[in-house]
Amino acid sequence: MSQSQLKKNETGWAFRRPFLLAFRQDLNNLAQIFLSQKFIKIMKKHFVRLLLVLALGSIGWAQAQDVKIGLTFSPTISFIQASSEGPLEVSSAGAALRFNFGPVFDFNIKDDKYFFSTGLIYVTKRANLEFSSQLGTGELNYNLQYLQIPLTMKLYTNEIISGGRIFFQLGPALELKIAEKDKTEDSDDPIDFTVIDAPIILAAGMEFDLGENKLFGSIGYQRGLINAYDRDKDNPDDDDLRVTNQLVTFTAGFVF
Image (tube, rainbow, N blue to C red; front, side, top):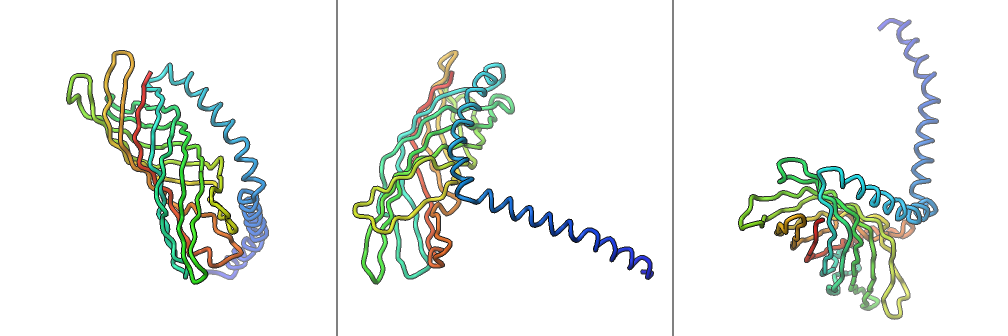
């Protein structure tokens, strides 16, 4: 490479470097804003309203499209999986009965057998955590509420009986925590759960054709993919604790 080319490259880098540094600083500032507690509170306040507007608008739009609109209700068994790599021993302290409900939208992709299934589901969970250390033992109990948006695929078989088809559902979901309540008696050291959760959904069920409408039921399992424990960044020991939410669902639904 000639001296003139080297000088040209050095000049170009010297010219671009301030802009790259400024751009990186802007990205850092945006990340700090998005991760700030103030921004999260604003999002939680307006996110519910936005989802309701989108859901109502989707219903009107879906009526003119090849989309199945339904309502679901699910009694569930809610429990957690807990682990710690530190000196604190943790485990699940049992399961609890909870429920989910909300509208669902199934978009026909191909041949009335392959559907993209989503919706806006109100989900309740229970987190019972048992711990022990050199200082003693204890238990923490929390009621959690989320708004869930499934992003799943639903696959149907041919009719196995008159008007009846089996279906399988698989895919992730995004959840926004809208409420958290500490139900622990005499809790001196409460913990927090993350605003966002992301489970994987696996379900199988059967749909029955009632003419213009359909009735369906399914059994499913939802397993959290991320750590739902909101660790204290100022406490390095918190890095050792991991909690994932899990649900067994028994769903009944009606398609319009």
